[in-house]
Image 1 (cartoon, rainbow, N blue to C red):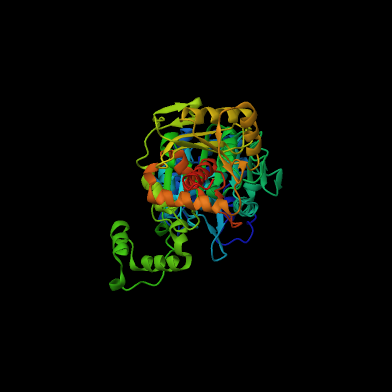
Image 2: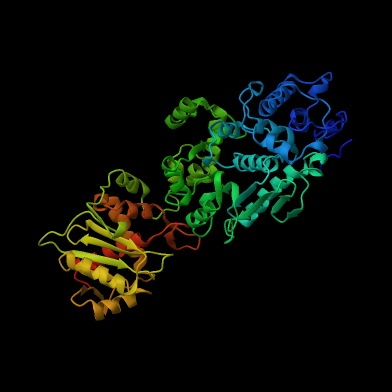
Length: 573
């Protein structure tokens, strides 16, 4: 009898040893598939369920289609299942035999072969829940998943890619989690899949040569499964990846867009991609990927909280329902127990409930708890912003309103170092009387080059005030303006050239920008500026700034411009 996996509950590896001895005929592992899935249906013992027989017929039917052999064999042994036969199995994972009634072979194998730990601490077969089934119905080669908390999509992605790894020779699967702790949790899920496979597989074609902290290698298949954290600078470097799973992308540290670009570069032609996350505000990498999915050919999957059957509480009194609750019940067929759960999570999570337990694809991103600026005003303006009348310097300089004779203008500059990475140098052109945004520059430029550009821009706009932040790189830019760019009307503060951003002036000018966005959103022309405003948040350290993976250079240039404009108009420069 075959050896049982660890902590066996309802797992019957003995089914494999009950097969009659014999050799598999080359190219015909039909019966092997059914037996490897834990089936006894071919011996037709008394008490075999209709569903088991139906699922085994479906698996055999799919395998028969692949090898072109409808006749099933009974005398097969797991020890004969080699890389070639596993490869045939891998090619039918996405087949949907009629006998499986809409389920894929992969879904059936997940339930037959893979074990997960339940929330009650028990080990049980991985049977696809409602959200997982919905994902399988619409899954494409490139997928992005927006979900409520604990819907089981991380586990399902791990399971799908594990099955592909052990049935498709030469496969490298890479899972990227947002933290080291999350990477370890995902690896435990994957290792449980491996530990509970039948011994004949684990000590046969799926024997491992390395199972270290977060890597499993199957030498006979030349396949491996790796789990890393997004904080690993070398994640994906030098690899050729067939399956890439990006977990909780919205919460990746550092610059998620840059990390994701590097990982995409490692993907082989035809590789499968799953990006999944709960939302974490607008403007970040995950939100941008979701917004651009239609353009990039990525399949969007949205899973609201009520798709999880466990999310229920005591039924509320029907007479207490609000108009919003009535609307939800009518639109999504919710019941009073689900409304009871909704009230509970709203009480527990308050403003974050829309984010952690998403109900629609738009509002879940627009949780304003950590946003500095009023999001409703920004979203409304984004729907009506005009395109620039001129776009110069390869898109770095946008112009909406040209200079008018007799008008006075201001050019506010937030300088950066000028390297090809990191922050941008940004400049905003404002009309002094109204504060209307007329032009915007943002690019990797610094030093003398930036000094010449902003001086020319100020000259173009009727010799505009030139307001350069003198912190850090700004002092060098001001020095170049003074020595090499004669004739500029440089703004001075306290008798010294330039604008000084301090712990007092910074919140003041940001507050002025917030007020302008709320009271006069029509003054803002730049879609890029407004996008930066959406992702400008209160950070965990108590400060304010760009959400991880986003920029705030345009925001700070505009804030400085509005602050300097107020001082100039007030006669207190």
